Image 1 (cartoon, one colour):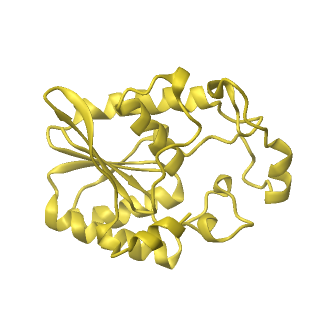
Image 2: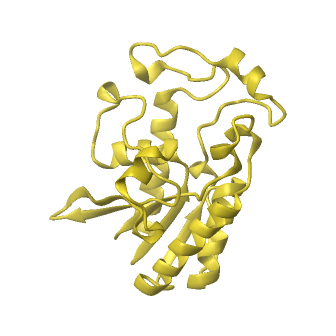
Image 3: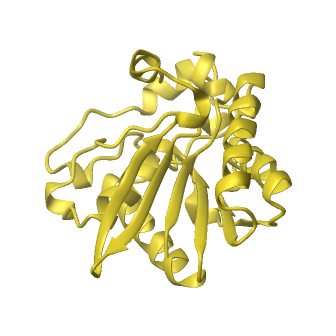
Length: 210
């Protein structure tokens, strides 16, 4: 059945250079507007005939709750939809975080962007396991609210990119961008990638977004 991967709305960490994702930031007012626009679109096109999964992080959960209010579906918190796990304390400053950053290595599967965090292989494995768990659970739509880096790895896993040829980051998504995973003749495909029609964005806006 179709799976709609949704990146959370704009978070404080997307606009404030002193706030990192490990600080668990909430949505900005713009992020809430983005989530509302997507929720209204989902209300018209999908309705409540679906399951809604979300990461437990504030920005994802807040996005999911806005969607839930419009489609009348209770969000299911799935901790494995978590952001890249940095291993950093929530009190770590941006300056302090730089001391944990490491340079890319070869093979990329062994790289830990932060020395105390997940390796690329570990987050890729987590991405595969969580989407394999969600895929058979719903007879209709599955809406999945998560984070850009994990969504990138879910897409890579879905279309069968081997871990040995995996790149660090390939599929970039906009805040509340929606990517549709489905099947065609038994094969896993991407039907739409990073759909942001609900935002009324131009290609230039999407190109400039973080």
